[in-house]
Length: 125
Image (cartoon, rainbow, N blue to C red; front, side):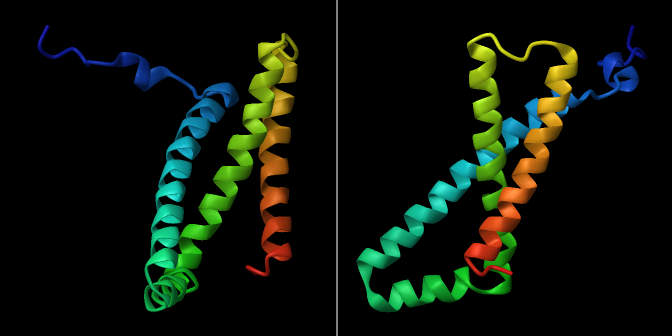
């Protein structure tokens, strides 16, 4: 009994697009909570003093700040589009396995496109 693996399903399980997108939806939700915390810090520095706000902007516009902006923007777009997909499921549309796979791929593609368009529009590139 002691030599048996705890989770043998992990060794034989092959990830499917539905499970990967579900996990990604949860991760992006957590990422957006972190983004809200950054937004609150920025708002706090804005209301505190001009020097604090300038320091926040310096950090936010640095290479490290840009490193966090891209995943936050991508998370926002993916989580929103996947949420719309879930709302369609809630009203009974798109449960066929081919439709689930197609809408998952479309959601990923539109998220990337929306992120790039947003970055171009806001001059992040």
